[in-house]
Picture (cartoon, rainbow, N blue to C red):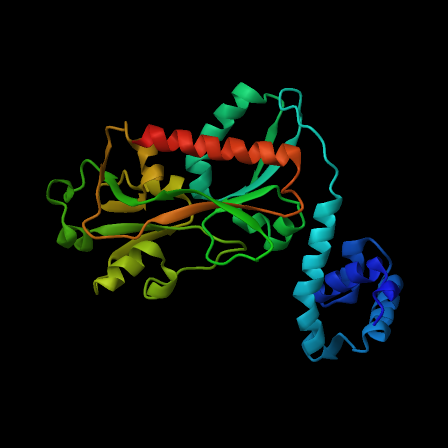
Length: 316
């Protein structure tokens, strides 16, 4: 095939079609009519000698050739968009830019307050629009609709830029009236009632099953490694809720240290080291290659890292 015959618009059509597997939704994404989208698919089929999308009982499904093309087409378009981004200087003092951040509850509780303080000093006109993991998708980040996602991620698309913000370990937070405070060992931990809290990744969460250790996460996997389990009384996706409930005299919240230290001066709770080993977690930030060379975005990333470094020093 002669590459001169390829219309760039057709690659854009193909990228969206392979992502949506639906002509109507693809047309909507590109803000064109459905007949125009159907005509684009017809031209792609003729150009590539393959049906690309085949109608099945479960809707339109990509062919084997389409599946092979999908990552290549996405990579080519992302690199082209990145190369065409205009260069510009950024004046933070006069900027009124809105930065849209997907931040986990953990990141919002620990990093964001310090970041806001830094922006008050350097860029009073900048606004943060903070979203939750259920508000956005990886596609939103990849397309540059979200400036930054800050969370703990298991797997990431290869196209994303990423950087570790910090590593955090775990502590136990409980009421000063909790009966295990003065004799806090593994046996006391296991006989107590616990608050489970976790929020990671993208998408809407599902209900939790206390018996499904594989989905319970860091703390319970660490307990499973020593053939132990704990009694979970409350499940929550909010660290603020967990910290509030930890004031109850019969509950323990096992939290990342930086979250718990928000309450370090609270006389009603105590923060103790867990009586077993829990692997640390990494907080990461990820962003689209489309934004990587943008001057304002580059400045903003530096503010996040500077804030994280300052908080690390404060915690020591």
